[in-house]
Image (cartoon, rainbow, N blue to C red; front, side, top):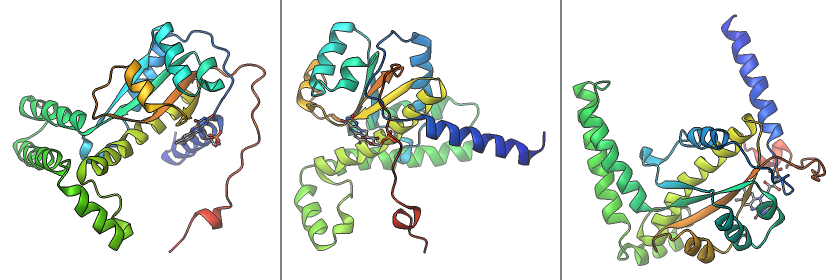
Length: 243
Ligand SMILES: Cc1cc2nc3c(=O)[nH]c(=O)nc-3n(C[C@H](O)[C@H](O)[C@H](O)COP(=O)(O)O)c2cc1C
């Protein structure tokens, strides 16, 4: 098989997958095989993240009663109530710090990295750890607000507790999107949801105070009667600016 054919096949499969993934609100509720959910979660972990710090956890809500409670905390949305299971994306700088420490241990013990690579990663991780420790401090918050007022384009800078939480959420969302596509590839359906009470979900999952929840994902298989409208997107010329 030529390279060209392979690329074409991959592209065709990707397009099919991207079209198959829809936000589904009516699931059949049948239990999913653990290995299917685990496979999807594993693929989600391959998503890119800032500095590879992976500042997120994917909370798979397996317990039936807990799932019911989280579903009700998702504004009792149809998608959440009918889903077979739920995955809550949780992010925060403390998770990024934990990743940095784990990665440093990996770097030190790795036989796949040469000395130059190890030196590079050690230095990068040292910078990231300093950044994570210092950037989340409250003292940056007023500075961040002023900077964002003067230059709104700086609004997303990861300084101060809120800026830092937003920054971690951004990487968490990449994992969420990878999860949605992985689910579609595994023959599962999904619905990303931001309609939920973060306070209630955090309480049910007993999350530490400083973590945030960018999105909750309903997983399952669409019911035979699920209503799926034709997809509408803005025209290319409206959404894409070619410079
Ligand atoms: C960040 C985010 C939050 C969303 N929240 C909800 C939600 O709370 N409930 C819901 O039914 N759909 C939710 N959706 C799904 C969108 O409504 C859906 O993706 C959009 O209408 C496009 O449809 P499609 O995903 O089938 O292409 C959300 C999607 C995103 C990306």
